[in-house]
Image (cartoon, rainbow, N blue to C red; front, side, top):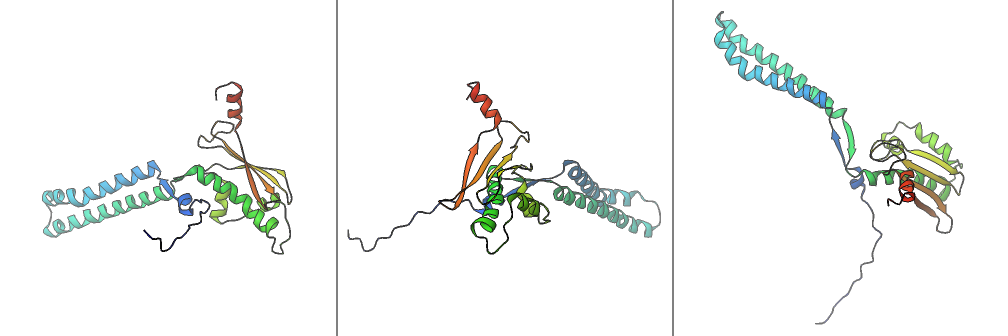
Length: 221
């Protein structure tokens, strides 16, 4: 068999798609959702059950008998509308949950540091240099939702940000409480970011949580 042509596919660095990180689901408020469902059921009953029953048992004028079902339908429709509004509110005020919280946590951590590094350290673009602490204070004042989310992990906990060394060769530590929302436990995620001057990039170091240190000392892991 003769080979007519041959091509080589250059391998690329693996990456995580933004849609993977952004995938979320909402857990609605249970009390509001239950109220909405009850109101909708009551509205439907008024429209289809009580209308027929009420129309048959009325002993008033014919005009009143014709108008009674309409009144019940209007009442049922209004109650059902309130139920639908309650359902919408339950989802609007629900808890947002990420499908991949661990990846989101790492992405938010690195995003805080890398954006600062690109803007003020690696590619200044004639900007006046500011320290990372000044950058954080400026970011915290932002009203944009996507910027405010950067200060939280994939479970909605606020990061603990410690600037060990500020300046062009900064060292920054960011702590996440993890899924159990308690500090100093086994599931805490702690990263330390520093500048690699030779490669001109940010290097990341994983730091075990205090609970892991204790378990290591006790010989449990």
